[in-house]
Amino acid sequence: MDIPNRVIEELTLISTVAGSESNWMFIKRQLLLSLPPHMRKLFSTRDAKTKAQTLNSFEIEIIGLYEEMTGIRLELINE
Image (tube, rainbow, N blue to C red; front, side, top):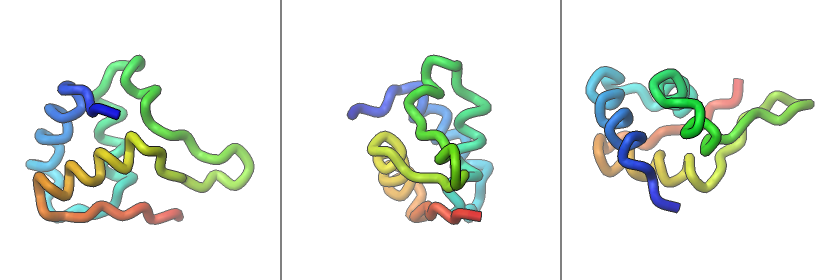
């Protein structure tokens, strides 16, 4: 799946202000706040019963791109 240019632009901006943040949920929240609704649908949702987060293939691609851009590997920390 290709990552839309708008997502890449927002991810670039977020990476400049996130510093050494390695929590995927922080980056995901920032992306969701900055993207229009039709693009937010590309992201995964929490499990209805357990409330645990899981990654979909789109998010895995974003995490890989973020690592290429910043050298920081984002991690999913289920709280």
